[in-house]
Length: 355
Image 1: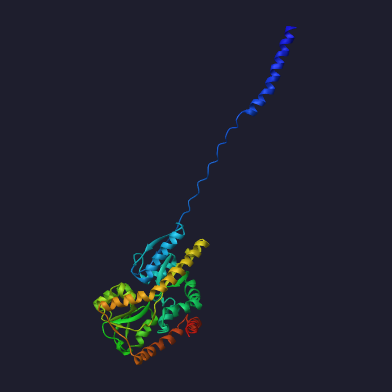
Image 2: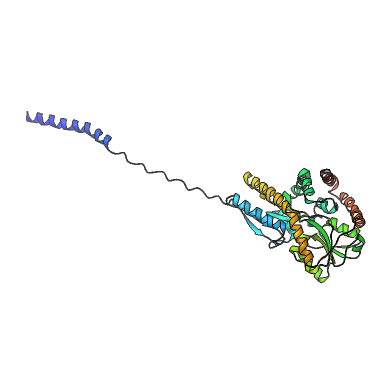
């Protein structure tokens, strides 16, 4: 009997435990799960572009180029950086085209006239002397079709993407003797920038000498050249007034500094960065620079005059002679291989925009 009671007691205890254990477990606190760590974002590797030019850093175009670079780096939040080589530190002006076309340099300000032998359409400005009367006229012509033609007919077929032209201001003749009429060029060794200007100097019985702008000072000092063709801005930035006596106060043409990028480098950029480059180029390299160029030109002109250069402004009769001297150059340019219809289209756009 006692054994039966003991067995019943043990069974009762087991039953109570079986019922109690789930209740105890249910009342126990739920353990806090270990949080999943937040993944560390993979840092974006910046795109570094090699940008070069051969100009002094006081040059108007360069001041705005450097402003553009700073804006790109800031607005891209570090996604774009530049290796910057100013003043010919990496490559001289006469080699810049080849370096960008090949991709050894990603971006550059190119002195376009240096390469008229490679692409004769570049001589549009020099071949059509006295075509523009203001920077605003030039900008209007660019906006009404010349920029697209410049890109399509010149740079796209040379493996470059073209942003815009950054003119150096008006280009003048400077010499160590007075230049009043075209016949005063006879026998003078004149530094030129491209084929069309060489043709113009030859038409006036001068002797054209091809020479980079960085060599003008020494050329004038040593008598290698008697004069040169460049802008007031270039003359002032390189202190050429120290070796120059006279200037013809007649703006012959605009001189194009073209802002370009190697086509593979351009295509490798994300679309939003392409849009950023273009937007800032339009704003800084075009709008802001164009608003400043007349003032920069006048400042440089005053510096040249204060530096000792004597200016000669031609009379209305003499101006006719200068215009006549340039006419054969325009005809010659249109007859060059690779110009033809494209060159005529550029002239037509210009004349329609500024009529």
